[in-house]
Image (cartoon, rainbow, N blue to C red; front, top):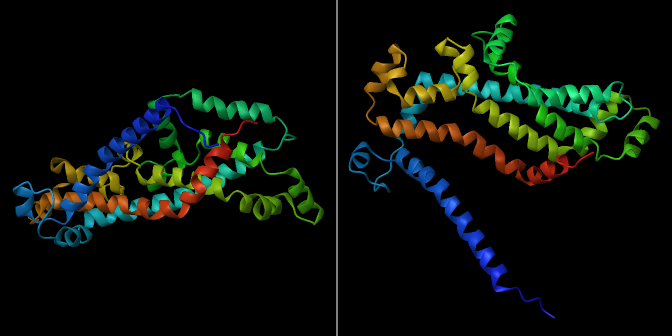
Length: 288
């Protein structure tokens, strides 16, 4: 016998669909307008055309030939790639150690990790620590202070707890060291979690802005997000770049093209790890 749903249940589903559809449109419409504007000419932008009748790649040619943007792109790529590798290395090793119930002082160490999520010393001590480490005006100030997330450590630790101990014991009987078990057994079984947390760290590094304006004074070391802010607010652009940007034929389309270029890396990476993303988060959220 087929189950007949009540009208209230169907109404609830339709309401959810309408709400999700409206939310999707609210997000997509500005992005589509920005994308179309990056291919438009200056005349069509001036007359307020939403869908250009003539498309051009001039804005992208200018953006990809502007040293200010290219340098920011390079810095952000370096920070994102190197920072994600460092963060995942530190996070997985700490999480794996904390997942071992026979680890000495395990509860104290877990409490210490959780405490950092609840207590914050403040901005001034944060700045003084970075200055004391000699990281001011260095790209490493965008990586080292953000290398570890306590929240990610807890979730990754919970994910490692789902891996059967029998697999590790069998590997040790075959002669594997603790490092060998971690590299050959644990990490290959943790691809969903690794993919999910790699995305978290990568997006965080790619969108790095606050640390850059706080610790870096050299324009040549500014990441892409700071460069975009300078580009969108012309009065903040360094003097040597104002003349060049003021002579561009498509000032608004250049800004649109620069923003689109800043989104491309995340859009390229996400489809490859999407299939692991949900599984990694759900398994990592299981309680011990």
